[in-house]
Image 1 (cartoon, rainbow, N blue to C red):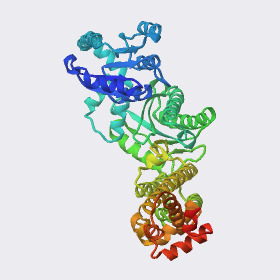
Image 2 (tube, rainbow, N blue to C red):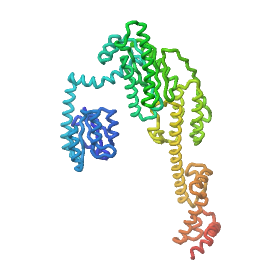
Image 3 (tube, rainbow, N blue to C red):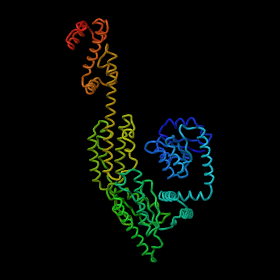
Length: 539
């Protein structure tokens, strides 16, 4: 069974097509839908799609550009193009660049059926061919970098292999290592300059750092690298035979010196060429199979215990280094809490607390990654709290891009983010509050108009479920006149209307307006208009 992706910015086209077409007759069991080119690429990254049907005319990324990007990543993925007559020439050009077929709009169901039948048969033939040895080997070579990455991740995470099994895997992956080789591990963390960029840009920087590292290390070492689950770069080094000296003591001295010099040079080159800092930890030496887990954990522990502001730092675990003295950042927990400050709208006090956190962090004897994690967790939980208390998701209030998915590398980067979050939250919550206030005013006015004959401040407050004092204050604040002035205005307007357009007696009008006796109504009318109701009617 197969999966298909339908792409069109006109949602009704693909929604109708999904429901009306008999997909199961063409062995298609799942239909994915995208309403833009970018959404389609995202789905293709996450799902196994066998066929793509896309409209040619879409904003931002049209169908031709989408197909070009699909073919760049997945050259064998069949693409079917939907086109109007106006784009006929474009469709023919797309066909020359790998589009299976183009179909004219409005869509002819029979032509779609014939096209799908042909495409599905072609896919199934390709699947059968892919079972051949050559196809399997091509697939293996294509995935070899990720297989190497996964194996190194498994080893540093403590997965154990029998010596023969590990040597077989290393040979199968064309890695010049053996289970009993003496190796060293280098752990690299990209610092603040790089993590301020988008995820895609950060991946490019990681690729650039990896290239610089391999270029330096490969002159003297066999190199194997991966990216771990903390987004650190891991390099495993074994001295190349061509560089080894005959005497063992000389060999050990050379190995230690070369790894130290190359790692220092890596730190320098990244700062020089990429204009951003990295922190580099060089582990002690050990056996690949037996010691790699301990080497990694020691390097990771050392890296987490120091924050590499600016240019980062280099640390060799072969040398003795001062143990860190960890202290708590008490200011995070001092009253009033961050939740309370947000609840009570003390925005400026919240910002002042952020500056105090930054100062307090800088005075810690050791400024660690865990301290940054702690600050981020406390602040983010407060932001989530106030969003949920206002019946909204934080991502809906501030935008998904502002909810961090990666750790911060410096306290200034973290507090800058927090201040921006605070400003966005304040704007959204104040807008939301104003909308709610206007809704209350509308409810009050509607209630007043419908209940002039029996109206009181308490009955109005009960209707909107608020305190009478707050109701009076809010009405004055929003409308610019008091609630009693507004009620009088509504009553007098209705009195004029009834005097002009009805035969009601003055006392009857007085009763409809909720006055206890007509004499008081006459007095209020005279104060407002300078004449009695009867005089007004006679005029």
